Image (tube, rainbow, N blue to C red; front, side, top):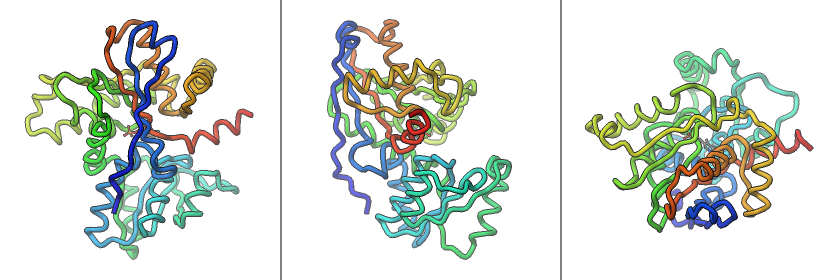
Length: 306
Ligand SMILES: *Cc1c(COP(=O)(O)O)cnc(C)c1O
């Protein structure tokens, strides 16, 4: 049902900084194969969609903010694979739909708004959903697609990398993608997660919990210390942007002809370049940056600016 054969390009990034520091930097373009079921969200949906089909569900129900990449992916997947979709959106309805919700609606998604207070309390939110949508034969996917099946899918991200590497880097919002990546590593490989929101130890704890669930022996987490979370590049919090970040993203796009979003991949790449310049990576090491997508939400930010 979900096609596996899509090729994910691995691009070499060769610029003055990578050359000067002798770092082999690559970017895995998971944003490219599918325009709307994009990036890491496609990996997170794969086993969830297979499970929904197996359970004979005809509707996918999920959650997100008004600019959510995940909501776009669910809406597009619903259209492509013939599920009805229900999107529970955090916050009040605006008079005009933004491009994200317009796209979702055009795909056939049924949009419902809930207050931020209700959205925050997951137990109450799930109760509300079960009460209101009990007649829809729905399969529920948590916010961001971040559940065990989502992580199962994210284990497959590094399978597309056909070279040896030392480090793999990803942006972290819930940490589910990072957990999947860590579970897929060989012993001599390391993962770095770049936390895009401001909350001390948040992603560290989330990833640890997921790894404990997936690994029979939790001690291997400590023994096998092959991952770390970097909290230095969130730029003040989720979706917070500074001029320095915008300039970096523009420069990177000009030099390499690769667009980055300002919420996730821009912050990760800024962090990678800063670490390269600080000598964090050793000469001749290979670093894979995962382009997790996110460019649909970015048009909003650009529109505001121009
Ligand atoms: C959702 C998203 C992430 C975060 O993934 P998590 O598994 O929640 O950490 C990273 N990058 C992009 C572009 C995303 O849309």
